Length: 327
Image (cartoon, rainbow, N blue to C red; front, side, top):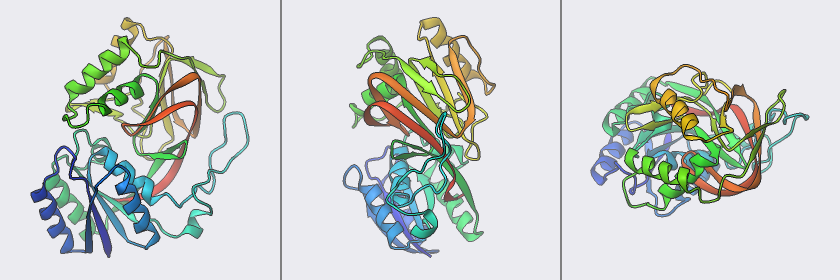
């Protein structure tokens, strides 16, 4: 088996010593090349090259941003052969470089050894947040030829593993991104959330949400989940769509009001329980094949905790069995 280990040396909990231990352990089972990323987008470029070269396995050692880049690189030349229908319309195709996945060829499997601060994707798969323990899990899975197919989300040409969103959460991600160099602790996210709530950088443009079989709904912020938990606040899981998983469609959690009582109610519920939320201000759906969101004015758009930019329209698609993960 040929494999590439992609290491983000800037990730929160990656170290040169840990990289060497991981590389040595993997090299005992696979023919391994190690690449340290030097710039934003480097992991994506490496993974895309690996897919084109017929590499069997790409292991991402870093945070959720590194994993997202690797996933987007692995699938950069693939397409969905049968995209879900658009809201109120017929089936569509999503171009990802031309051709059907069967014609593009097999996509390398993904391995993950967490090295970031949140590691949402890895935790959702049951991978230990400790890099040493995660390495043992990966080696054991390789020895026993154990893997899992996972569904992914696709939004505006960007694949996402656990969540994407428009509005408040993307504003928070943008504020945190400006503090790169500081460890992205739960406290940093909380402070960014409070500031973005009281001083939204782009205001609060109205969002119109369309899902198959439903009338359009209005909202001010929208979270789209590919699995649950949606995120973590330190060690505490945040649950928005508890029925959402890598085997189901997308989950939608949107609020059409952001008054303090509404926000406190839903935040408290998300941190306290896995039960489904209800509320007069809540627009929530589970297991959706697609979601379209239109904004009255440009709003921030984030994917897997990274700010992509500003958008006035985004279509989110669920793509079942998109990727093989060694786990």
